[in-house]
Image (cartoon, rainbow, N blue to C red):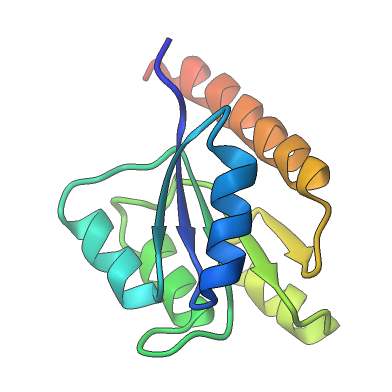
Length: 133
């Protein structure tokens, strides 16, 4: 069985490195540095199984990325986990309103992130099997 593909979007190289190192044993990881790169990746025909996205980034921030993805009609079924240093309720609420399925605050426990990813992927697999995909 092929590894599930995770798209990581974060402008902090150190965070991308930590996430990649944590996930690589179990997942195929693609990491990009801003929301516009993420959008370009998706629009080029790539469909990851899950997206991990920061909120505060240059060019296209996480809120803008979320809004574009979830209203596209093409990528709206890809689960998105926000990974942000901002733990304000208003950011969490806005993320969920825009379609994020999960929100994790930095600094994070890598084992917790892996557990959350696996849970999101299980839920997605069950959903897709019910609708026949």
